[in-house]
Amino acid sequence: MSVLRSSGSQLGVQGQSYTTSGKHPLKTAHDTYMGAINDNSILRKVSTMANGQNQKILLASRPVGKPTVNDFKITQDSIPTPQNGEVLLEILYLSLDPYMRGRMSAAKSYAKPLEIGDVMEGGTVARVKTSMHPDFKEGDIVLSYSGWQSYAVAKGEHLRKIDPDGAPISTALGVLGMPGFTAYAGLLTLGKPAPGETVVVAAASGAVGSAVGQIARIKGARAVGIAGGADKCAFVKNELGFDAVVDHRSPDFAAELAAACPKGIDVYFENVGGKVWDAVFPLLNTYARVPVCGLIAQYNQKPGDTEGPDRFPATMRDILTKSLTIRGFIQTEFAAQFPEFHAQAAEWIKNGSLRYREDVVEGLDAAPEAFMGLLEGKNFGKLLVKVGKV
Ligand SMILES: NC(=O)c1ccc[n+]([C@@H]2O[C@H](COP(=O)([O-])OP(=O)(O)OC[C@H]3O[C@@H](n4cnc5c(N)ncnc54)[C@H](OP(=O)(O)O)[C@@H]3O)[C@@H](O)[C@H]2O)c1
Image (cartoon, rainbow, N blue to C red; front, top):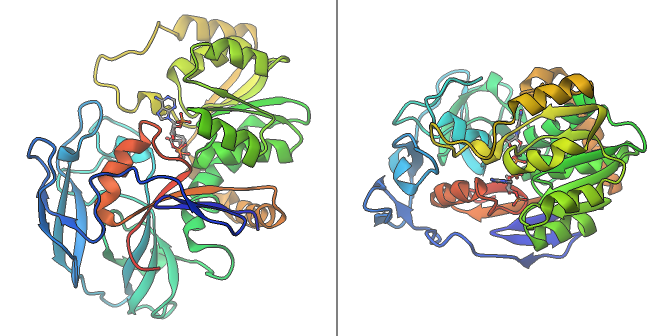
């Protein structure tokens, strides 16, 4: 199996592992920060262990622009008790994803926003501690949507069992989970790359982008990645095997992207928006397809913020004159394809054609800082929080 894992952040390449960074300065192992985190961004440390307690991270306020630690509140509660048809879960891994920024905002979107005081939402991999459901037993590993907390009660029908012998259980939140599926469904259903075509994807070292480029290559297309910084670019080219990569932080980014796409762009998998879109847009070929998956460069915008010029008239002109297909999607739209994706991706991982990297931070209390970093490109690979002892 070809695996590139980082944990806290340790990176393993086919069996080896080494440390890449310790970039979460507010995090101290086993420390717990509690109460409103609002003392001029200084976390108030009030206890050292969450023993026998359920540690939770709540939405404390709605961010204006970039989230700060003041927007999160860490609390402790008693561990909940499952009723008939439910299980008590000990959370092992929490997935941190860009969509969570949307949930913190009251702006109308495809999903309901969180209320102030709600536990932050999120996908989790958990161990069943107590089962009151006939299909689950103590020790089972499951995929749940339990959010930023160390324990949770869930109804059995909301859980999916994970085979711990199939692949590392964390992959259920990354390459074999929602982000990998997003790449698969968005690229193949909407992007429809043909052999020899050029597929460009931004955030190319991340959870979705890394899979997009590799699947494009599996389908015979030429994959060009866009990533931030030399280390991520080297990883995308050398470890993931993209045909070319361009650094969006380079002052000559637009010219470098044009040079990397001498035959133009047939599929642009949009993860970012903003300046990256400005550089991609003139390179789109007639009949190009643009699955619009994410616009992370805009997620921290304040009301009234605009980045760059008004792109609307030029975009509409080229949609017409180049017969472009620009199609937004939310991965749940393609849920029926998940079993097919899972079987196929597991096979690709086994035969080495789909590689992945995880960036794992230790301890639930590290989640706010890690999440804020994700929105600025500080993660390197699928961002996960190791919450419990695996
Ligand atoms: N539509 C759906 O159903 C769906 C599902 C999952 C994810 N998504 C979207 O897919 C995109 C990627 O998500 P992911 O989970 O795979 O995250 P990720 O790529 O693992 O992490 C986010 C990356 O975005 C890049 N980034 C952040 N701010 C940026 C900026 N201002 N300009 C350019 N790049 C920036 C950074 O990479 P660099 O340092 O390389 O720039 C960062 O590492 C996001 O937009 C997300 O919202 C959509």
